[in-house]
Amino acid sequence: PELVVAQDAKGNVVARVKAKEPQGWREIYDLVLELRRERDAPVDWAGSESLGTNQETGEVNEYHSLVALMLSSQTKDQVVAEAMRNLQQRPGGLSPQSVVGMTDEELDGCIAKVGFHNTKTKHIKQAAQILIDKHGGEVPRTGKELIALPGIGPKMAYIILKVAFNIVDGIGVDTHMHRIFNVLGWVSSKQPEQTRVQLESWLPREEWDVVNVLFVGFGQMTQQPVHRAQLMRRCIDSSKPVAALKLAHRLGADPNSGDPETGDTPLMYAARRGSHEAVLALVKQLKVRTGVVNREGLTAYDVAVKAKRMDLAEIIGAPKA
Image: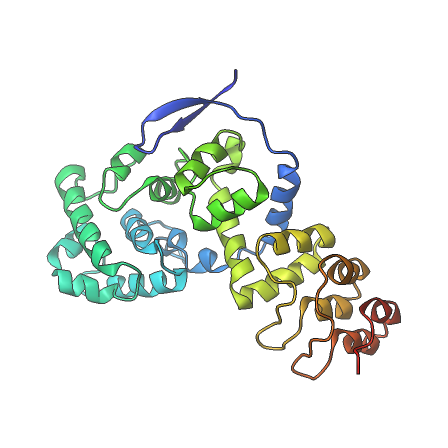
């Protein structure tokens, strides 16, 4: 049988039998690539993967990437970004040496808004000392050495290797990916680490370096109101609007959700854009509510009439008196 070379939960190299690819996975994967083309989900601009990179020069500070990832568990990307700014703006900046020189109270004060900040304070201090004592103050370049650091599991280790050194030894799987891949039937697992092992057993290796940010961002967009509205608009404007809307709905995006600023629902947007396919899918297949009113006091029917699309207005139906 064909084998896949990967790493176990401790970073040891293992060979696993290649599993059969799930039916239809490539179509879904390519559709997500299209919907995520802009790369403007929170993970893209405030995620731990981007926080160690100088946005002007593109240069990566390996230690900043490490700390950002240590802060990231159970914490929104925007909160991690704020904590990183607090650390980077301290006198002396952010380095293993500066962290060791801080008191626990000083470090905790900088990261107080992140989840489990007390535990993370302890782990960041311990890891900084280990880097100085065993690695010359540098971030190690193997999964095994990274996983040996306090607070670092396989997910963080493989992301750090990719971001800091462009080494792709494994897939970093977070809770968004774990949920999405189980819903899609690409894996059948109870823990993110099980998801990683199963995913690596069939996903082509050339996708390993992008799948994390791609699907983390997609998961964020299905769940956060501002980004959800944006995602639904992109579904409607995509090359496969019906498949895209069904996928977003399947993964948790409410097709009735309105834009926080305008109150426009996806149905209103589809009517305004004149997308017959999308209107039909939203009304007939996803059974969206048609009587919702936006900030202008208009229903989707009104929007269709205003756009002179009576064919769409007929599908939507006039609001009941």
